[in-house]
Length: 217
Image (tube, rainbow, N blue to C red; front, side, top):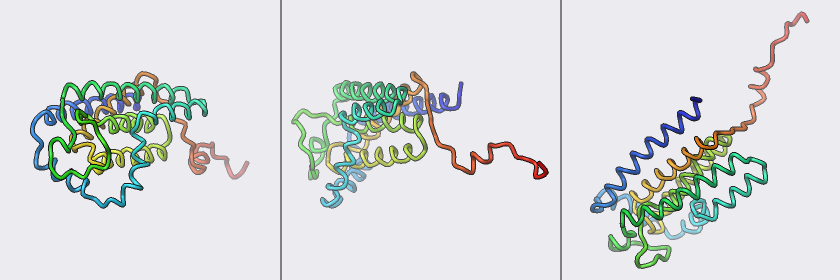
């Protein structure tokens, strides 16, 4: 088993534990710690919304086909398959899990929530679909593309998690569970299609790889 496959197995295993624990916790009462974290983020200034909202779209369903199309345009077939499998898979599973856990949105569980998005009266919170999609795409990108792309995906994923608390859409356990579900989906997709890194070697590394010539030749 290659290094990437081993790492993906570990990611899937650890994320599965996190998902299970967070789901059990989310089915109970909202803890004081969770409320404190939520309040700290949800009470941030309104002016941040303009910057957070566009970046938060990384976790929406429409991002999946857009990234798949981009991957196909660059003839990255394996990347396209992994993005589609992980993204669509976790989006569907998240919708099912919402009904199983049956946890409401923050406004249904807490008072004085700063709601920056509109939700249906019966809308459910756990797990966060945005966090699940972002987590899935991030794990796929981290193993299929270069380190630079992986860092960018991690930053966007983190913004999605914080952003969902900021707009009043989810509580902390919702985004933790969503991210864990996404990580499972991304890791499984990588295991199914395999990884296909194409990282350009720095010039120094390329020179080091060349056989050294004797100064007398």
